[in-house]
Image (cartoon, rainbow, N blue to C red; front, side, top):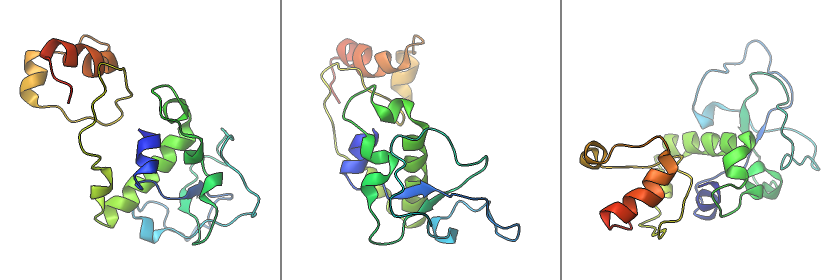
Length: 159
């Protein structure tokens, strides 16, 4: 869903902080408004880097006017096994963006309407299912296939 979230404006530009903060800084708040702006070189490009700068680093918002195309989300593709599935940095940027959207009461950014996949397997990082459907059609252990291929075919529903 990283590609979809990015294209619908739910993802904001974030990068990992480069050095540990001083001891007097509160690093436990989930609120984006409590974070300092990211500082680093203008040519910094985290799209392909897979190593964290240090253990316990935070994801910080980029200053206004910064280049969002050098953040991990820029690598996302519209397929089930793209970077949004295997790159921890893409997921971390989505996570940080979710907290910003939550704090700003902008969860509407995740309302993408009804998508019809026609029994195409798709990543299920976030899914909503009626409890009745879960009780009547338990998962077999292959969650993605059950929810995106088997259930739609079995139930004759596409959305």
